[in-house]
Length: 91
Image 1: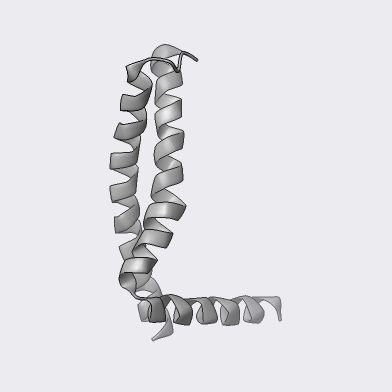
Image 2: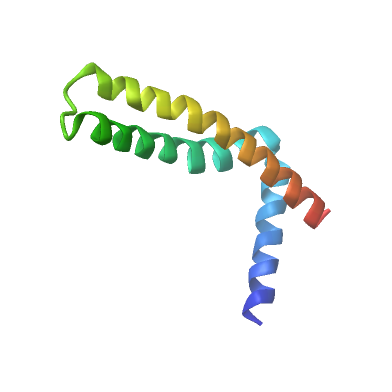
């Protein structure tokens, strides 16, 4: 019963996302929910590995920027793959 409720909820969420359009879906799912958090976490981890807990230098900004570029672009690809998978599953 619980699995059926989850599937129905996922279908309803997909319909809302589909009606909003692929661009908004990619931004929300890929960029904001995956790419942005992962980019920030990666940048902080890279800073700690390279320089310890010294966040006052330009290297920190550079590491965050590098993480955001890499992971946000990957997030858009992941969002596109998710869009295609859900479109195939629910259409």
